[in-house]
Length: 120
Image 1 (cartoon, rainbow, N blue to C red):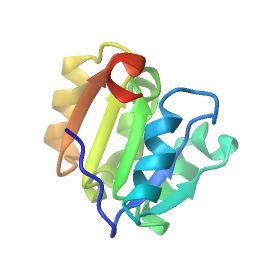
Image 2: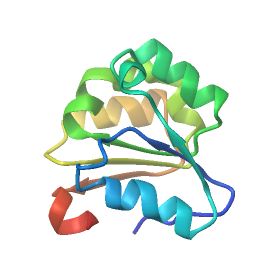
Image 3: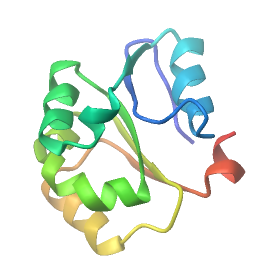
């Protein structure tokens, strides 16, 4: 269960045609939260993304399992500022999850796994 609150700043990294956008766009708007659209070029540059997460005070972030695998450790301390980190779309490496939870723990990490089955 992922809760969304009026005080949240939620990053929108996905493409509008990607099924997770249903959650990423409507959940913040329906709960009075702030939706922060992240430029595609920023998503692909972990240092820029880390900076944006911190500057925009992002509290909820969804990453695909593949993107999490590629950039989680580079996001580092930006992850500790998250109230909720959602990871979905595929299986996640438990060793990486353990490392993130040990070094840069968000308040809550939720593995959403199958996108269509559990998000839309």
